[in-house]
Image (cartoon, rainbow, N blue to C red; front, side):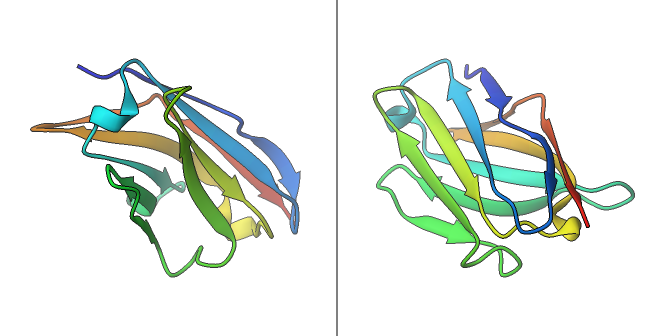
Length: 115
């Protein structure tokens, strides 16, 4: 089982930056993949970025060049550095962990970008 706790959300002006953190309850090197998703009001949850066990990364087209996913294995934490934020990035951001064969979710953290 994996428990995930997100932090770092908040209110920021367009063009600003935030860093989200996701602390896992087990060694993240043993987790198959970790990811960040987001869900805006009235929209479906969408994948933002993920990082696999070996360290490969994936980004949604909408965030490429602005967001960076990284991890600290020693701290069992995954980060999402978000730069050049836009109002359309406003959403609840969720951390996700795939620990075969189950997907685990955090409680979410709100990110609001004002124009």
